Length: 117
Length: 113
Image (cartoon, rainbow over the protein chains, first blue to last red):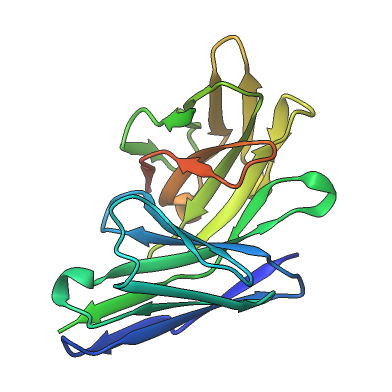
Protein backbone atom coordinates (compact mmCIF):
# COMPACT_ATOMS: atom_id res chain seq x y z
CA UNK A 1 0.00 0.00 0.00
CA UNK A 2 0.83 3.67 -0.09
CA UNK A 3 3.57 4.69 2.31
CA UNK A 4 4.57 8.12 3.53
CA UNK A 5 8.07 8.43 4.90
CA UNK A 6 8.93 11.22 7.30
CA UNK A 7 12.42 12.23 8.38
CA UNK A 8 13.83 12.82 10.92
CA UNK A 9 11.84 10.97 13.56
CA UNK A 10 13.44 12.92 16.36
CA UNK A 11 15.31 16.19 16.31
CA UNK A 12 16.72 18.35 19.07
CA UNK A 13 17.94 21.82 18.27
CA UNK A 14 19.02 24.99 19.99
CA UNK A 15 16.74 27.98 20.20
CA UNK A 16 17.15 30.28 17.20
CA UNK A 17 18.18 27.60 14.73
CA UNK A 18 16.10 26.27 11.86
CA UNK A 19 14.99 22.69 11.39
CA UNK A 20 13.81 20.98 8.21
CA UNK A 21 11.45 18.01 8.21
CA UNK A 22 10.96 15.97 5.06
CA UNK A 23 7.86 14.12 3.97
CA UNK A 24 8.09 11.71 1.06
CA UNK A 25 5.44 9.67 -0.68
CA UNK A 26 6.81 6.26 -1.63
CA UNK A 27 5.44 4.43 -4.66
CA UNK A 28 2.84 7.08 -5.39
CA UNK A 29 2.64 10.69 -6.38
CA UNK A 30 1.11 13.19 -4.03
CA UNK A 31 0.07 16.51 -5.49
CA UNK A 32 -1.27 17.46 -2.10
CA UNK A 33 0.29 16.88 1.30
CA UNK A 34 -0.83 18.07 4.68
CA UNK A 35 1.16 19.14 7.71
CA UNK A 36 -0.28 18.65 11.18
CA UNK A 37 0.92 19.57 14.62
CA UNK A 38 -0.01 17.52 17.63
CA UNK A 39 0.38 18.58 21.24
CA UNK A 40 0.59 15.94 23.97
CA UNK A 41 -2.67 14.10 24.55
CA UNK A 42 -4.44 16.19 21.93
CA UNK A 43 -5.79 15.80 18.45
CA UNK A 44 -4.12 16.82 15.24
CA UNK A 45 -4.17 20.45 14.25
CA UNK A 46 -3.93 21.10 10.53
CA UNK A 47 -1.20 23.65 9.92
CA UNK A 48 -1.13 23.87 6.15
CA UNK A 49 -1.90 22.21 2.88
CA UNK A 50 1.10 21.74 0.65
CA UNK A 51 0.48 21.85 -3.09
CA UNK A 52 3.05 20.66 -5.58
CA UNK A 53 4.38 23.52 -7.65
CA UNK A 54 2.48 26.25 -5.86
CA UNK A 55 2.32 28.03 -2.56
CA UNK A 56 1.07 26.26 0.51
CA UNK A 57 -2.26 27.16 2.03
CA UNK A 58 -1.93 27.95 5.71
CA UNK A 59 -4.63 27.60 8.31
CA UNK A 60 -5.68 30.61 10.29
CA UNK A 61 -3.24 31.45 13.05
CA UNK A 62 -0.29 29.60 11.54
CA UNK A 63 2.65 31.85 10.74
CA UNK A 64 3.74 31.21 7.18
CA UNK A 65 7.10 32.89 7.72
CA UNK A 66 7.72 30.70 10.73
CA UNK A 67 6.71 27.43 9.15
CA UNK A 68 8.03 27.37 5.60
CA UNK A 69 6.60 24.71 3.36
CA UNK A 70 8.05 23.66 0.03
CA UNK A 71 6.52 21.07 -2.27
CA UNK A 72 8.95 21.02 -5.14
CA UNK A 73 8.16 17.57 -6.50
CA UNK A 74 5.30 15.12 -6.61
CA UNK A 75 6.92 12.99 -3.92
CA UNK A 76 8.48 15.46 -1.51
CA UNK A 77 7.22 18.19 0.77
CA UNK A 78 9.36 19.87 3.40
CA UNK A 79 8.48 21.83 6.51
CA UNK A 80 11.12 24.20 7.85
CA UNK A 81 10.67 25.61 11.31
CA UNK A 82 12.62 28.84 11.20
CA UNK A 83 14.25 30.43 14.23
CA UNK A 84 12.81 27.74 16.43
CA UNK A 85 11.88 28.46 20.04
CA UNK A 86 10.89 26.15 22.87
CA UNK A 87 7.20 26.78 22.22
CA UNK A 88 7.67 25.22 18.78
CA UNK A 89 8.50 21.92 20.43
CA UNK A 90 5.86 19.50 19.27
CA UNK A 91 5.06 16.41 17.25
CA UNK A 92 4.75 17.23 13.57
CA UNK A 93 3.00 14.80 11.26
CA UNK A 94 2.65 14.92 7.51
CA UNK A 95 0.14 13.11 5.37
CA UNK A 96 -0.67 12.64 1.73
CA UNK A 97 -3.98 12.06 0.05
CA UNK A 98 -4.14 8.83 -1.88
CA UNK A 99 -6.87 8.87 -4.45
CA UNK A 100 -7.17 5.58 -6.27
CA UNK A 101 -10.48 5.46 -8.10
CA UNK A 102 -11.63 8.62 -6.37
CA UNK A 103 -11.40 7.22 -2.84
CA UNK A 104 -10.29 9.87 -0.42
CA UNK A 105 -7.83 8.46 2.11
CA UNK A 106 -5.07 10.11 4.07
CA UNK A 107 -1.86 8.20 4.63
CA UNK A 108 0.29 9.49 7.46
CA UNK A 109 3.98 9.63 8.08
CA UNK A 110 5.37 8.36 11.37
CA UNK A 111 5.80 11.87 12.70
CA UNK A 112 8.75 14.01 13.75
CA UNK A 113 9.24 15.01 17.35
CA UNK A 114 10.92 18.39 17.62
CA UNK A 115 12.47 19.52 20.87
CA UNK A 116 13.84 23.04 21.01
CA UNK A 117 16.19 23.72 23.89
CA UNK B 1 -19.36 22.21 7.28
CA UNK B 2 -18.16 18.98 8.82
CA UNK B 3 -17.12 17.88 12.27
CA UNK B 4 -16.83 14.82 14.44
CA UNK B 5 -17.39 14.34 18.15
CA UNK B 6 -15.79 11.52 20.06
CA UNK B 7 -17.55 10.83 23.32
CA UNK B 8 -15.18 9.78 26.04
CA UNK B 9 -11.57 10.88 25.94
CA UNK B 10 -10.56 7.79 27.90
CA UNK B 11 -11.98 4.29 27.74
CA UNK B 12 -10.78 1.34 29.81
CA UNK B 13 -11.74 -2.25 29.12
CA UNK B 14 -10.59 -5.60 30.40
CA UNK B 15 -8.66 -7.88 28.14
CA UNK B 16 -11.15 -9.99 26.23
CA UNK B 17 -14.03 -7.55 26.73
CA UNK B 18 -15.94 -5.66 24.06
CA UNK B 19 -14.41 -2.44 22.82
CA UNK B 20 -16.80 0.38 21.90
CA UNK B 21 -15.47 3.78 20.89
CA UNK B 22 -18.08 6.36 19.97
CA UNK B 23 -18.04 8.82 17.11
CA UNK B 24 -20.79 11.12 15.91
CA UNK B 25 -20.43 13.26 12.85
CA UNK B 26 -21.95 16.35 11.35
CA UNK B 27 -21.83 16.88 7.63
CA UNK B 28 -23.78 18.92 5.10
CA UNK B 29 -22.80 16.52 2.32
CA UNK B 30 -22.54 12.73 2.16
CA UNK B 31 -19.55 11.99 4.34
CA UNK B 32 -16.55 9.76 4.12
CA UNK B 33 -15.72 8.50 7.61
CA UNK B 34 -12.51 7.07 8.98
CA UNK B 35 -11.00 5.58 12.08
CA UNK B 36 -7.29 5.94 12.66
CA UNK B 37 -5.13 4.49 15.42
CA UNK B 38 -2.02 6.11 16.84
CA UNK B 39 0.54 4.31 18.95
CA UNK B 40 2.91 6.34 21.14
CA UNK B 41 5.32 8.52 19.19
CA UNK B 42 4.02 7.29 15.86
CA UNK B 43 1.91 8.61 13.04
CA UNK B 44 -1.67 7.59 12.38
CA UNK B 45 -2.58 4.27 10.83
CA UNK B 46 -5.85 3.77 8.99
CA UNK B 47 -8.07 1.19 10.70
CA UNK B 48 -11.04 1.38 8.39
CA UNK B 49 -13.06 3.73 6.22
CA UNK B 50 -16.63 4.23 5.07
CA UNK B 51 -17.01 5.57 1.56
CA UNK B 52 -20.73 5.13 0.82
CA UNK B 53 -20.63 1.41 0.13
CA UNK B 54 -21.57 -1.17 2.79
CA UNK B 55 -22.65 0.44 6.06
CA UNK B 56 -20.82 -2.17 8.15
CA UNK B 57 -17.14 -1.74 7.54
CA UNK B 58 -14.50 -4.22 8.61
CA UNK B 59 -10.98 -3.05 9.23
CA UNK B 60 -7.67 -4.34 10.39
CA UNK B 61 -6.94 -6.03 13.71
CA UNK B 62 -10.53 -7.24 14.13
CA UNK B 63 -12.11 -3.79 14.32
CA UNK B 64 -15.30 -2.83 12.60
CA UNK B 65 -17.60 0.17 12.46
CA UNK B 66 -21.16 0.72 11.37
CA UNK B 67 -22.37 3.82 9.57
CA UNK B 68 -25.79 4.84 10.87
CA UNK B 69 -27.13 7.81 8.98
CA UNK B 70 -30.22 8.16 11.18
CA UNK B 71 -28.02 8.47 14.25
CA UNK B 72 -25.15 10.30 12.47
CA UNK B 73 -22.84 7.83 14.12
CA UNK B 74 -19.83 5.74 13.17
CA UNK B 75 -18.91 3.84 16.31
CA UNK B 76 -15.87 1.58 16.37
CA UNK B 77 -16.13 -1.87 17.92
CA UNK B 78 -14.06 -4.97 18.54
CA UNK B 79 -15.55 -8.08 20.16
CA UNK B 80 -12.54 -8.95 22.29
CA UNK B 81 -9.89 -6.48 23.40
CA UNK B 82 -6.23 -7.39 23.25
CA UNK B 83 -3.42 -5.76 25.16
CA UNK B 84 -1.94 -4.57 21.87
CA UNK B 85 -5.09 -2.51 21.19
CA UNK B 86 -4.06 0.05 23.79
CA UNK B 87 -3.57 3.25 21.79
CA UNK B 88 -5.16 6.54 20.82
CA UNK B 89 -8.04 6.33 18.36
CA UNK B 90 -9.21 9.15 16.12
CA UNK B 91 -12.40 9.43 14.14
CA UNK B 92 -12.32 11.65 11.06
CA UNK B 93 -14.75 12.92 8.46
CA UNK B 94 -14.18 14.19 4.96
CA UNK B 95 -16.31 15.25 2.06
CA UNK B 96 -16.07 12.76 -0.76
CA UNK B 97 -14.25 15.18 -3.01
CA UNK B 98 -12.66 17.57 -0.58
CA UNK B 99 -9.15 17.84 0.71
CA UNK B 100 -10.17 18.64 4.24
CA UNK B 101 -10.18 15.98 6.91
CA UNK B 102 -11.66 16.87 10.27
CA UNK B 103 -10.47 14.87 13.25
CA UNK B 104 -12.12 14.24 16.55
CA UNK B 105 -10.30 14.91 19.78
CA UNK B 106 -9.33 11.28 20.15
CA UNK B 107 -10.09 8.49 22.59
CA UNK B 108 -7.36 6.85 24.59
CA UNK B 109 -8.02 3.13 25.00
CA UNK B 110 -6.53 1.30 27.97
CA UNK B 111 -6.71 -2.48 28.14
CA UNK B 112 -6.55 -3.94 31.62
CA UNK B 113 -5.01 -7.39 31.95
